[in-house]
Length: 119
Image 1 (cartoon, rainbow, N blue to C red):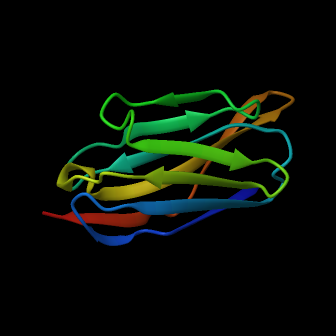
Image 2 (image 1 turned 120 degrees about the vertical axis):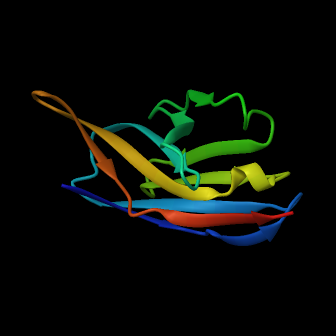
């Protein structure tokens, strides 16, 4: 099992910045892809960004140029630096990790952290 714990959410004014963290523990070896999803109020969960264990990144169009995803494999931690925040970025942000196992991959989720951007 892999346990993921997010932190760093909060209330920020439009144009501000926040840094989210996701710390992995437990059987966290062989984690390949990690990433962030978000779920705005009344909407479905949507992909924000992903990063592989080799450092390749991918971003949703809506956050490209504003958000940066990074990870430290040795520290088993991932971050999401969010700049130029907009009210539309208000959501619960979830981190996830895909761990390679003999039968394929297992996916794990954090509990979520609230980000609220005030206009």
